[in-house]
Length: 62
View 1 (cartoon, one colour):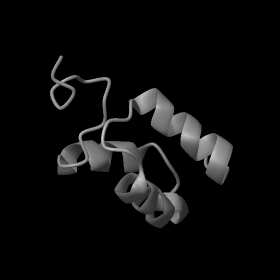
View 2 (view 1 turned 90 degrees about the vertical axis):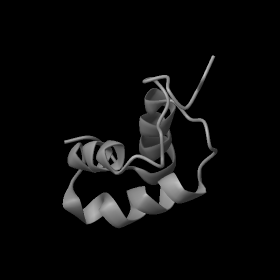
View 3 (view 1 turned 120 degrees about the vertical axis):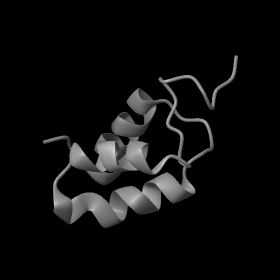
View 4 (view 1 turned 135 degrees about the vertical axis):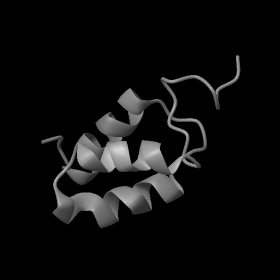
């Protein structure tokens, strides 16, 4: 399986994917979300990432 091409995984090298993720959250949280994206593991699913934001940072989708 090619995790870079699998849609359930976040591709941190795709600007449109980062913009999509940021669009789901309040603008005040964007800096924290960018930091989490930079520091999280290379292959993380969207669901794992959203759960991480909620559990560890108290950041919820709009």
